[in-house]
Length: 618
Image (cartoon, rainbow, N blue to C red):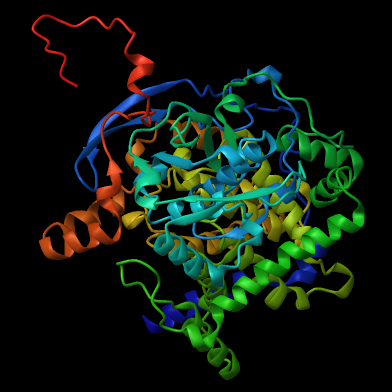
């Protein structure tokens, strides 16, 4: 029996080394997958207005009926017919954003929305009249808002700071000062698209001015309403925003605008699907990364493109290094789960094994991916500085895989074949942009398949590209990675981006490596893919549409529900956890609009009919 185990381990190790033998791969890899196919399957259009009532299900405090949307309502495909699909318009530098954890849709998005609201108030001349700001968080933003630090992000956004500007070390002292003083300096410090700036201090009480409403708004599970009032309680401005995933936001007006938008920039190689992108590459004899670079250079100079990509990689690598720091070993993550950091200890153990040349087969390679993915996600859980890739909840997969290539594979390649991080990032961006515009990247709209699944596909595409994969192989690697992530639910325990999110990123990185291994051996196995990346995107979107709301980032089903059921058997602990997670702040039932104060003389002339026996009680 032991001999059989040794043989299996040796066979597995040989298989992995065959994949990692960069020289042989680079020279022999050929792929005719889909090369004869000109068929482009276009995803179904999604309508933000289509919704049905989901079943009643248990929540942290009782029951609530949630809306199950037929479409994410926020993708570039919203309201469009198949024949009217436009070329993708998202830039790689919009997909990869420097910001703070733990969530792109629940932290970065609300921060940006509140900042934009303040910008508009300043630009429209309302700032000096503002006496009070109210922000209502709805649906998933309310149900998991405390665990995702949405309330903290709202305050930072109203203060006018951008996600990239946040000094993570100063966040808690600033929030503590606001709470103690009861004052908040609101405003906008200037910048694109306007240099108008201004600030004003107002009374602010988070418990009063940030409202958590479990009921979803009609167009997306992540809705929020920003309201500015004057000294008389009269409305100055109100805007409804939707955080559609990956830190992207849209106003209600933008969501309802179903007309196709013209391409923002005339790019040399427009494409609307992966199959079209691969055809462009074949026609122009360019790689996917080269096509993406040429399109980016239509938006900014080549020097700016290079500098931007270097910055993205720099922030990713810095996040990995911070998460691996020895002094952080065993430190507790925020919240009541009692989770502690594991990445530093795992990394030290991996280094010691590496020095002793301990042979552990496939685990010899998996350990590095585990360390790097956990390092990023543990930083993310602590509101650390991360790169959205394509979301914060999945921000560990791309950096882990790229770090693995840069530190463990790149030096094995011949010097002329070695790639820099930009090749990886641009190929990954193509995959992520298509997911955003043709399906969705929001866990609240499509489950974790939309976040971790997309990130896994991005990492597979990037790794395949830097290992010399042709465009067809890059597509197939992304397709395999996403195909085997379909149906993944988003059920964060207590609404925290910790369980299962942290380990799920490590699993995603390993899956990406496995997908690339399968593809790069395709000249040997002659595997012909039955599906294209466009097909799997369409399936992912329809699967998300059919997924019950309790499995879409509401912390009301799956692992989250099971954990709460166990806690309920410990009444004292259950009460303590509810208090820590702000459960009492979540309002269930029909939403109520914020009350506008009026004077008696303003309404005394109104002839209000009263029903019989009504004594006019107010």
